[in-house]
Amino acid sequence: MKLLRHLVLLGLALLLLAACAPTTTVQDNILPTLVSVTVRQDVIVLQGRYFGAPGETSYVVIGADSSGQGGFRIPDVREWSPNRIVVGAPNGVGVGFALVVVDGVRSNALPSNR
Image 1 (cartoon, rainbow, N blue to C red):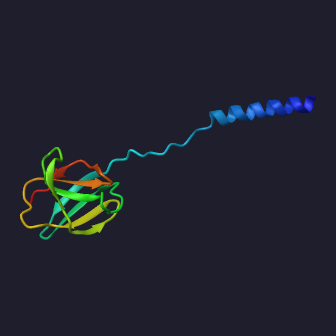
Image 2 (cartoon, rainbow, N blue to C red; image 1 turned 120 degrees about the vertical axis):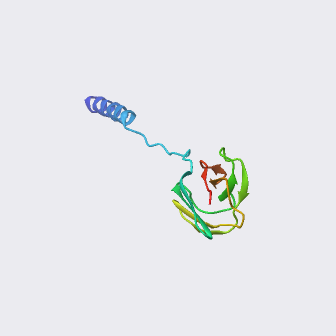
Image 3 (cartoon, one colour; image 1 turned 180 degrees about the vertical axis):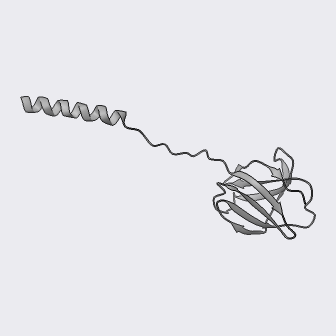
């Protein structure tokens, strides 16, 4: 009987300890963040964080307004990494803002003036 009582108390103590243990959470609300936009002669270099991988729902927009609306999608992606994107600079790129869309989620917009 004493053994059963000790086992029950031990089990309750383990449950109490398990309830107090820290839990891990998965962050799924990380937004792509644009840090800099550099326009060179024939390319535009975008640097930041959380760009993920290129795909149908991940792309660069140039010529948007300050809120990220408008502009046009750049099809000439030359390099894409989680923190750096290089795209071809189309003719006529002038005043406007650049942003990155990753899996349908838009980054902040930064000026992309030549």
